[in-house]
Length: 509
Image 1: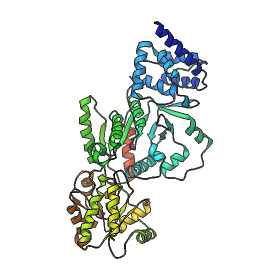
Image 2 (image 1 turned 90 degrees about the vertical axis):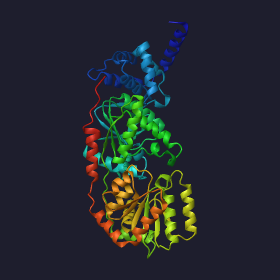
Image 3 (image 1 turned 30 degrees about the horizontal axis):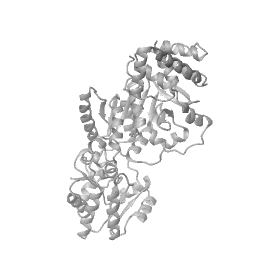
Image 4 (image 1 turned 90 degrees about the horizontal axis):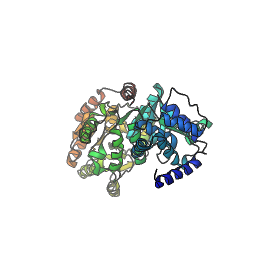
């Protein structure tokens, strides 16, 4: 060994001397030995002995085992570059060099954390759903699906630690929040798990039923998908940040692409519509140019179950949101440019200037690049137009508004599914929506007028038809009533069957 190598070796030993005194090191090495050699029993009682056992069990040519070793020792998930560097170190210097380097780099903020290798489980990543009560369309799908998985199957709900460096099980409060039930008082075990136990997926099923945009999360998720020997799967909502990037916030396309980098190595994706499937097929064709086949993709269309409002809910919504004696036009969705709400405002103004009487209600919050919508809305309100934007409308009030509206309008430029279209039709209210993509897919079954969303006058003409042509309106109401129904229970079971039950674990290398 060169003099420089001997100096480096002494430095590592000195640092290891401090790390070797950490009380969490021996338990982590024990967990690692048990995971690498499940049929063997760790016989050593000292850190040095456990390190020797782990070194003997670790195959440095197997990137999956290297990933597992780094994860367990650090109590955090590595990224792909970390795994590659450690594997190369091992091939040159042996398994013990991999483990001692990992011990040398043990993060100080991981001191005291317990580590659990989760094998043979179904781990469902609900990080966003577990920490918010905001119900966007994606979160509503996640909530409805995961609630039924949790009810009908053996499921472990997980989320990410602060900084997105590791995975842990959800606490009782977080589980209750995700399932929509009142949270019970946290138990001592609940508090312990949220504070000190990191979960390392290993030969399990890992399912992502929501969109992940946080780069620290997705970079570690990529390495997990590649190396954890898990059967991995996701619900595919859309590829809007790829196909309509100009309508998103400036950071969203790059963040979304990092999520796709992980999904491209997953085993299965269940898209929520045929339109979303078409987007994923195009993306899969594209990534073959980098030697990646991409996941298997299947369409499992979303359901919609209408919730019939009570007379009290109808009256409360009428009193709060409706203008007496004039019909209501309803537009549901956030005000990001992709939703095309500026066109709805312009179409409405064209009709008001023709003398048509109606009120226009938007239900949804502001989002990226919604400043122009807010400005135009304020201008029309200042001019005395009967238009309002309501935020924080609960489900009961929303279903009442669907029922009270003469029609709804949803001329989006790109949607993975278009829940407001399906919800309006499910309760029997005709819709004006876009004549392509998932919106045509939904509307083609009846109850909708399909228009070019980039043509303000076409939108205005369709709204006018539904406000003034009673025979056309009645025909669309009948068509909506005759549409086939589809339940959330059916959707949840179909996605479980595809993403979990028939999705085999990869073979060991």
